[in-house]
Length: 102
Image (cartoon, rainbow, N blue to C red; front, side, top):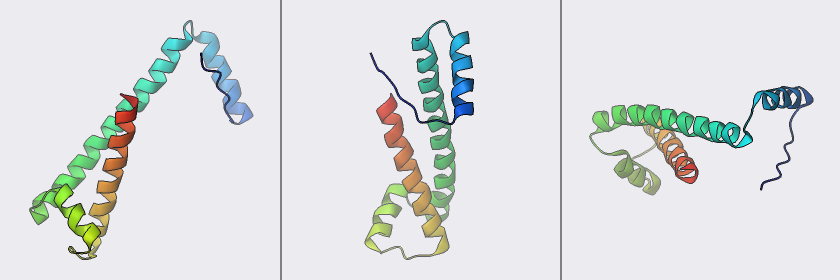
């Protein structure tokens, strides 16, 4: 059993306590929060994939290949490459978070 202590604002605490009074099963409540986070990560990953696809088509290389070159300083520092690298890093971070939740 997890005894969870949250550092939240009093108004947030009040609202959370109100929600918990409506909840018959705390396990289901927490599972729903986790499922929500999973879905949000999945949506974010999908949107990042779409963004990366535009760059991949424009520059005719995969994001993995691009990022490897970018890290080595081969691809340069054009604005597109800086944006693409940021998108790729967010994608990787979201993939990591998702794998930890599933």
